[in-house]
Image (cartoon, rainbow, N blue to C red):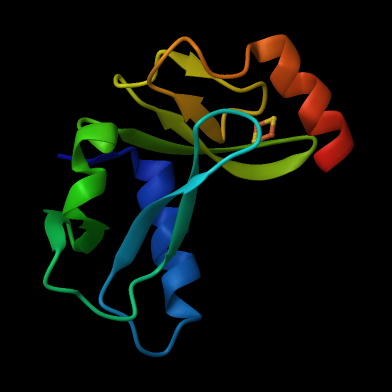
Length: 124
Ligand code: FES
C-alpha cells in the first residue's frame, strides 16, 4: 500500500494534468549513486503485466510488482521551502536515507550519509 498526504496528492494531480494521456502515477526505483535506490515519479504510460496497481483516492498508482517489497507502506508528502517545492518520501523499508531524501538503502552496507553528501556535492 502507498499513502499520499494531501499536499502530495494535490501536487501529483497538478503534474498529471499536464500529461494528456496517462494511467495514473508510476512510482519507479532507479539505482542511485547516493544510496541503493532513488525514487522516480512519472505519468504511467501504461500498465504492464508485471505491474501492480493501487487506488489512492481518485489516483491510480502503478509500480512494478518487483518494487513492492521496497516500497511497502511508503508515504509521499510534498512541501515547499525557500529552495522550492519537492516530494518527501517516508519509507519504513529504508535503513538509510541520503541527505536530500530522494535516495535510500535497505541495507546498512551501502554508502553512508557522509559518503552520500560527498557524492551529492559532485553530482548535483
Ligand atoms: S539523491 Fe543525492 S543526496 Fe539525495
